[in-house]
Amino acid sequence: MAALTLCLDIGGTKIAAGLADSAGALVHTAIRPTPAGAAAEDVWAAVAGLIAETLPVADGAVAAVGVGSAGPIDLPTGGVSPINIPSWRGFPLRDRVAAVIPGVPVRLGGDGVCMALGEHWRGAGRGARFLLGMVVSTGVGGGLVLDGAPYTGRTGNAGHVGHVVVDQDGRPCPCGGRGCVETVAAGPSLVRWALANGWSPPPGAGARELAAAAAAGDPVAVRAFARGARALAAMIASVAATCDLDLVVVGGGVAKSGAVLFDPLRTALAGYAGLDFLSGLRVVPAALGGDAGLVGAARLALL
Image 1 (cartoon, rainbow, N blue to C red):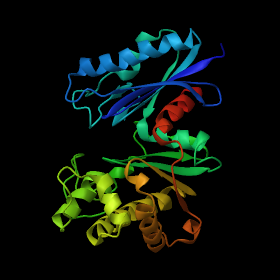
Image 2: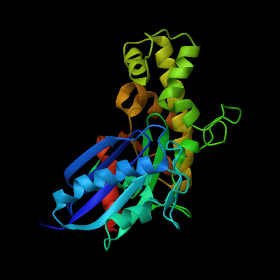
Image 3: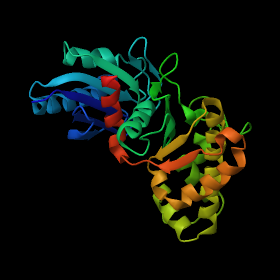
Image 4: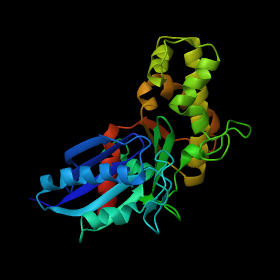
């Protein structure tokens, strides 16, 4: 069997494992829910179980391992402290994975940069040199590919665009800051604003129902998405001006809303991105869906 890369994508909602060939095609995937509120070792047991389930499929052909994790991460130590996995604080993820697969190199990266790498390699970002990959879902995450290579920064956390401040007097954010774009444009934030401004859905309705209402012309839902899109556009313009981007790829559950998000986003971006060198900046939907993190982790392992 040709050499394969074991790839892991670890987040607060799900843990995924896959095997990718040298071209980045996934030949096997497996997914488990992330144990909610579980102790550190119980979360690790879910990861280790997926690895144990996946390795026999490779039949000894695993040559490298790539791990994408929700952050913050600490590349120098290989530890992770995901905001959405409270029991993992400085958890030695890279060393734990390496101990399960001895003798195979393990590369760790943030889930945002892995998403960006996956879309750059095999998705909507192919051919771009300076790319921001974003996930707009229950939070807002991101990663950067600059001059064709992943840009991780000093600790591995470059590209945390969800915590760009867009409202100086805005709501407190779980990160400890205030007015981050995540507090305006993430799915729960859109729903919270809509409910406070007169949206009256059935009990339990969330961002998906809000998007459907916006598509049907509900004025409050339309305003909620327009408000979130403006916040995203302000953030994108700031990051684009800083990094001289040529493409932004947007994925995640909220991005599946389609035109109700992308139309006001592109309109607002035209008003924020006024510099000449940003005139060609494009914003496009992601192409790989939930596989982007796995594909990007595989790419990271091969760099």
